[in-house]
Length: 94
Image 1: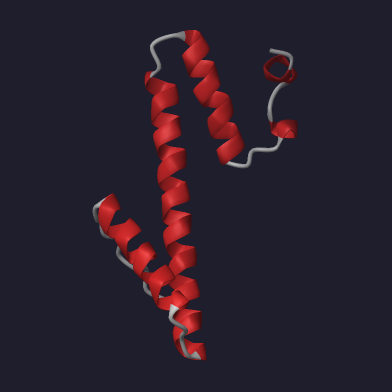
Image 2: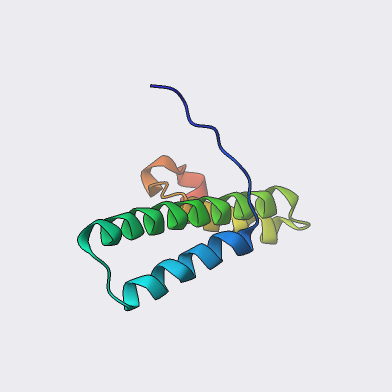
């Protein structure tokens, strides 16, 4: 299977497509269109979640204070779904 190319697009475009999907579903769709809309919605939400995780990680790396950095680090771990068993005892007790 050939790897698909990724392209970049503005966040506003992604959110507008998502709003269009919701608007179409409000008006009723046939079964095939409904499945397509759900697939697109799922892919867009996954992309937005990845963007939020990446932004949080960047904020963690660029934080100006250790308290701010720690807050973003914990937020990133939660967003990334990293189970607390993967976090050291030192990190848990802080």
